[in-house]
Length: 95
Image: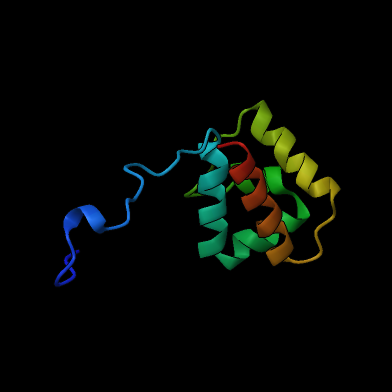
C-alpha cells in the first residue's frame, strides 16, 4: 500500500501471520456450515453426526472436538446463527 507523502515506516503494522486454530476440524466445520445451509441445519439436531457423516465433507473429530460440540449442544441453540456463533466462540477460545 502506498499513500502519497507517507513513508513506508509510517504505515500501520499488520501481523505477519494470522493465528492458527488449535481446533482445525472445528474451524473447517464452521466454514462448511457457513457455506452449506443443510449442514448448518443438521448441526442443530446432532452436531457430531452432521460433522462426521457427510458424504463428501466428513470432518474428523477428536475427543476434544466432540466435547466442544457436546458443550455447544448442551447450551441448546435455537437457530443456526446461535449455533455458529457458539462454534465460532469455541474455535476462537482455543486459538
